[in-house]
Length: 284
Image (tube, rainbow, N blue to C red; front, top):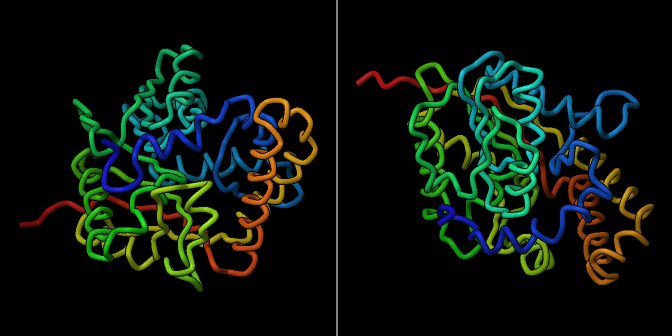
């Protein structure tokens, strides 16, 4: 069970294509989400800035326990424990390849679990939660608007219950901007991210109402266009090595996918939301 959105099989279809393939065109931290750019810096610096932004938004400095929902290959878990003084960082992923790599690194204060948020049982509360690039998979195109919103509400309810009083959640997700689910790319739905759908910003706000207050919101679609251009450039430069790993057809599919990301964020069909939220206490 992975929650009301994409199944574990759908997630693994994308992320388990091969660690070596992604390593060719992601930065050295292997961060697979929109960077936070400043000036003429390189991709790696921009990715670390993004990670630090989210760790600051959720108040992670020196906390006892942090949860990363959709932890990828563990870049945020590593930075949280090595640079921000987090005593224990737990990551959730539905990708077996990602979980194996994190566990193989053997960091004593980092734990990766092969499970989704809906099945996670914390045991003890967390002081901070981060979720970057996972919210896009928390709904499906075949769900009704009410079902979609109920799934988002279930996610925020989980986070509220998993957080200690005063805890914070930092969230990053692609959103619809001047488009909606009727415009969702069939290519994306069939070949890149099956069983997934994007939220509208208003749906996030509605689903979190009464559970979290929004303390900070950034909309950074230009940052995602730049990130996707950097990924595409790196993939093209490593084309021969990539084809040797996954074949020419897969490489062409990813080139098309990254190119569509650049166009979508440039045109404003999609946006990139970074949201800092604080847990609200119940007063009744």
